[in-house]
Length: 377
Ligand SMILES: Cc1cc2nc3c(=O)[nH]c(=O)nc-3n(C[C@H](O)[C@H](O)[C@H](O)COP(=O)(O)OP(=O)(O)OC[C@H]3O[C@@H](n4cnc5c(N)ncnc54)[C@H](O)[C@@H]3O)c2cc1C
Image (cartoon, rainbow, N blue to C red; front, side, top):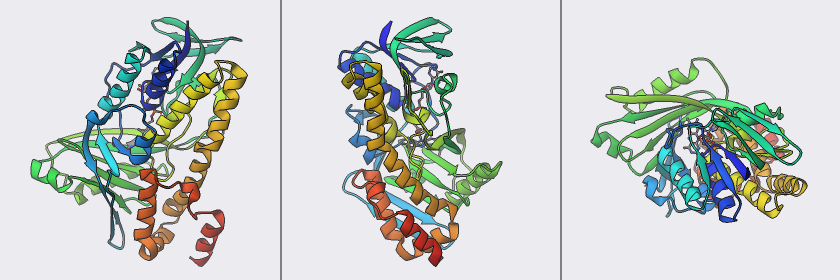
């Protein structure tokens, strides 16, 4: 019997466990994989994520990028933004996530590794989790089990998330070609109609990816082939392909059912503009932990605290981000016009949001301004 069981040891689950353990709560993490485990991800940690990261994990950063480049096709436009501090810091997720989890273990968290949560059932004052190693009980459960979120499905929680497909290739290139990408987070619009590509430099290789905001069979793979060509990376000797999904629209809610709280991708909290999900995973992991501690592990107080904190912080930000995402992905001609008219400004603004210096909801992407833009188009 624990106070809290956390299912999943990604950023959301690990940081929640860390915070709970430090507050003296008896917490266990269940992780289905053997650790450390590969996670399909660009491994780009943006400034907004660092702002909500209370644990020092700088040692797992492979490269800092204080420059971001956006290339827009067709039209051949290119924009570059610089900041005095890194815009994106590059890591590999096996090391990043394990560093967060290690901090949680040091703080007193119990780990059950290679231990998938298979079934969850509710009692009036507890939650029971069934695994192949036996059953465990806790007063509360945090579902941090990522985009496939077995726990929420098991609990019959309303979904409504939009999951988009993304590919990530870990590409080993010769040293001189790797140096061409050094220090720059590169993004490309227009290599596929409703998405973008990225090339992130790591210590010894490139993480190259594409995502599409709409599901179209075959489109992503074709786009990836073209993108590798464009980057001059088709002929490389070693290439590891991976694919997964990103939730770019949250659940319709609620995000807590009785004694089960959803955080990170399981709740659908990735950025609708970029697909970046680590910053909101870190934030919601901590909001869940704070709600449990602040609510004294009492069901009604915890429910109220968690729902209120999401309504005040993450949810308005995701709503505002969706308005910008519509402009960028649903209307390619409007996007081309917006970039030719105000491309540098748009890039500076999005860079500021990524850096955590501005919020989407403070920008002028209101329905009224978008309607005006659409009408003028
Ligand atoms: C191709 C791609 C590129 C991306 N690039 C970036 C990027 O550069 N920057 C960024 O910020 N975001 C990126 N994202 C999004 C980011 O990866 C996610 O938003 C983030 O990992 C969410 O964290 P999480 O803790 O909610 O879930 P996850 O990181 O998915 O962790 C969930 C954990 O739960 C475990 N688990 C699952 N089911 C069970 C079970 N039944 N029992 C026990 N354990 C279980 C899993 O093994 C996993 O360890 C990318 C996503 C994709 C697909």
